[in-house]
Length: 125
Image 1 (tube, rainbow, N blue to C red):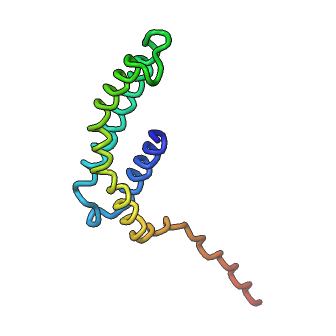
Image 2 (tube, helix red, strand yellow; image 1 turned 30 degrees about the vertical axis):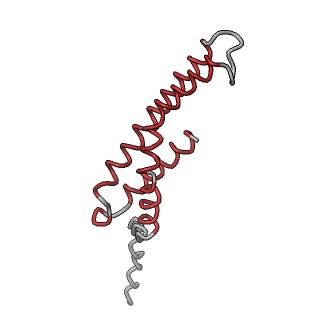
Image 3 (cartoon, rainbow, N blue to C red; image 1 turned 180 degrees about the horizontal axis):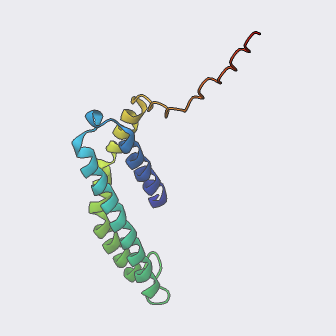
């Protein structure tokens, strides 16, 4: 999920750069930052969970007090960052919708070749 979330954030940030300023909601930049920070924190908490899980006593697996207690603590620490995604995640759709309704940028001007010079008519004698 976190890999897909990073892809969605990157896509939204790219789309945001292509939307005319008059169509951009000021809150979008803030909300994208909240989502990115929450995702970064979830990544850190996941790494912390893996370390905690690996340090549990042998035989401490799902269903044991030590494992379940550590997992519950991990979930409790993660909850507020997941809530940020639940609260702010709809902006990814809003930005996508705005980007789809933005006319494409005009193509870059191309150089046109100057008309070839016609040879001067030969003088009559």
